[in-house]
Image 1 (cartoon, rainbow, N blue to C red):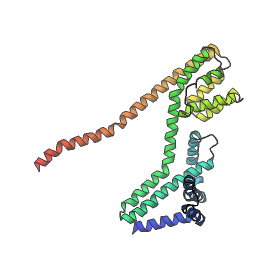
Image 2: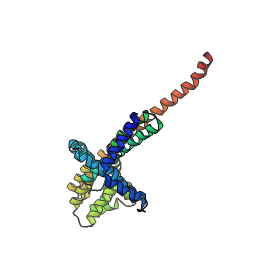
Image 3: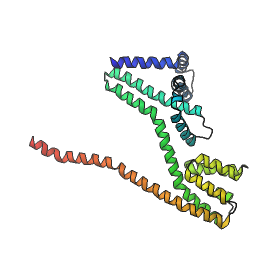
Image 4: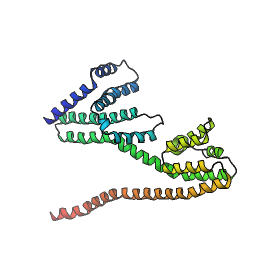
Amino acid sequence: MAAAIAAMILTAIWLYIAGTKALQIAWVQILGRNRQMHKSDQGLKQLFMIQPFRQMLEKLHVFDSLQLTLNSYHMKLLVLKESDWSIERTKAEAAASIGSGYAALTGCAWLSLVGKEPLLLIMGLLFGILLALRPIMEAGRKVEERKQQMITELPNMLSKLMLLVGAGETVQLALARCLEGKELEQHPLYKEWGDAVASIRNGHSFSSALERFNRRCAVQEVSIFTTVLLLNYRRGGEHFVLALRELSYTLWEKRKAIARSKGEQASSKLVFPLVGILLVLMILVASPAVLLMS
């Protein structure tokens, strides 16, 4: 009974939020008048998840109440996405995640009604909450992974830059040659470094290109690197190489610390499978003795 009431109430609220216009457009698309299936799926998602839930959140002033959380999520997406990412698109992402959680809850409510299993309704509630919060946690994890990738690769790029400048190359040309043989889209540092080199070739000043590179990376170690670069690149020669060498020692130490932390995380992750295997072995060894005693 509770599952039936919950399923009908959740569906009615969803249809009320979406509105009759969304239902009419969805019905037209289902009848096959829109042949582009990918665009149709995107349109249905916009109609039934993003747009209605965003309007509901704005009417309830949820975005205003959670301004700090929204700003933090927006800054993470700004780092992960392109530089013109707007706060409106962040709100749309948040609305889509809440809509996905609500859809999971509604679906589990109907499954609970059909299967006559009340536990499915509780599982749907938990699953819906996880789906709503997952993008925020996933964005934080991706930002941390991106930061570690940059810190890990920056010492290698710094070593190449020191060798090239020490061999007589100009700083601008050395920055470009550091990217030779690199897949720019395969690594966040290569991508941002390549954008900075392209900006210099397109006529932007060296300082403005590096400042934009610093903002896009949003990593403290890269900020220190760009500061050292801007302070010493005009001097060139031995002074420039010495300044980079001092920074290189610090970056290599941080790279070692990241490698150690990853090793510790990998070893801690192995604890749970080992405990599970130990329990299975204990059951296999003890079960014959228990059976004989019985």
